[in-house]
Amino acid sequence: MEEKKFDPKTLIGFLLIFGLFVVWFNTTQPTAEELEAQKKEQDKVEASATTEKEEPAVAQTPVLNLNDSTEVANYKSKIGAFGYTPSKEGTTVLENNVLFLKVDNKGGQIVEAKMKNFVTYDSLPLYLVKDNNSSFGITFTTSDNRVLDTKELFFEPTISKNGKNTILSMKAKVSSTDFLEYRYEIKPDEYLLDFNIRSQGLNGVINSSAPITLEWKQKGIRHSKSVTYENRYTRLTYNHDDGDISKLSEGSDDEEDEEVDIKWLSYRQHFFSSILASDTHFKTAKLSSKNLVEDDTPETKYTKENTAILPLEAKGGELAYNMNLYYGPTDIQELSKYEDLGLEDSIPYGWGIFGFINRYVFTPAYTFLSGFLPYGIAIIVMTIMVRLLMSPVTYKSYLSQAKMKVLKPEIAEIGEKYKDNAMKKQQETMKLYNKAGASPMSGCLPALVQLPVFYALFMFFPTSFALRQKPFLWADDLSSYDIIAELPFHIPLYGDHVSLFPILASIAIFFYMMMTSGQNMQQQPGMPNMKFILYLSPLMMLVFFNSYASGLSLYYFVSNLITIFIMLAIKKFIIDEDKIHAKIQENKKKPKKENKFQKKMREMMEQAEEQKKNK
Image 1 (cartoon, one colour):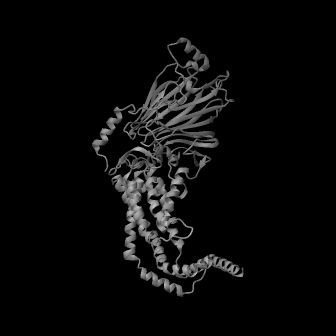
Image 2 (tube, rainbow, N blue to C red):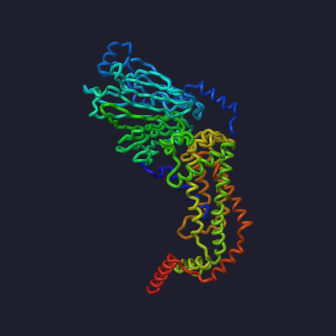
């Protein structure tokens, strides 16, 4: 279990980029016709155009030959009392304006769930459930010691209306009045269904003293052009222990044997989720996630296989669970409609303060801007707003660099004077910094201040549903990488394509670093070659972002351009190095009171110097 922690791969990428970030500071909307054509294509196309490799189905039950009287008789003998339900193959359709569902008589479970208003990256219909990728069933023991699985039972469907809502009752009967029921209720324009499990008259049929377990298993169907990128944001997330949100591992197989008080489970498939929620919390749960992605090839069909085994309790010998099923987008605008369930917590905003900023600042800000601006322009406008708000921090950083530049000759003089005494050189350097009111660490502080903003944006662009399949300039999807050239081979870490936005961002980063630190870089003994870092950093950024969301690369490209302009403005119109030098000289003449830390450091250095002399 991974509870309230950074995702491993995201953390690695984030630390890499933030490391570069600290170095920097211190040294076309689609037309109406296109949308209509896309909708028509979605309605027509029902099968994948690519050849898919064969993979085993999830818990596919044997097909019963209803024309074979012997086989039917054996089946009824196996299931005992539940043989009262007619053995009739078939499915029932439940749908509204946004969601299309098929429920099978065999098992009473959903065997097809299609999003009506969304398509995959290659414009095919988008399914969360199809081709036996999902199974949902209850295992129980009968009073005559038969172990039954509802996936093997036939259910009798009945459609009715509740106002504008459509209700599907699926009953596995033991008599005309006694049954196990799955009850689905779909509402207009909603992805959330009411789903109830109840039994009637089965207190003498089901052995309630034996375990009763609900197993929900589902493989995530690929929707994106890069299955490895999609898999990075595909997770089993769950609400437990009175509101804690936890996730199973993103990058490898994972399981959790004994979670307690489960309110909901989310099988998130990057931008779409299948969620099961219950008013009667599940007391315990056994959860597992299996990674199915081995390589990023067109033949890879699935991302992860998630499994939840949930014990159920029979009260008075009967089952009664009021639940909800959600098949729809992982979108704050949709999930926030169900505030009482707290489903919006399944969105991967990030951890702690980073997630708070992402959820309550950047998400509503971008939603507002994209409401009247093209999506790419909205990113640029939001970037300008962020950089202007952070400009005081940029000023502090540049001021620190200016002070260090002014002190550079004196620091060099101290270094030459005490070149054979490292301790004395450090001591005199600290005295100079203290008198001048400067500190080499002051350039790091602005970068640390910007850390929450930086990470929040790092999480926002790849996971924001508002960016999904939204084009801008040459990028056809701001939530995924842009492609200006396909490579005939695969380069490790880089990929088999060339993205332009990361190239532009890396160029802007290079010039920014040249402005802020390139001219002042000095090689310190035992330290990495700073000029090497100057060239390596943009290159690493270029490679890392080649497979990331183009919206994120667009942000960093624009952000660095704006920062360069802000730095030029500060240098030309705000900061005067001659005045800084004069002020430093004045500060050096004034008596400077040491704080406790400075005093302690000075005393330690003096003691070390004294011990050295005595030796």
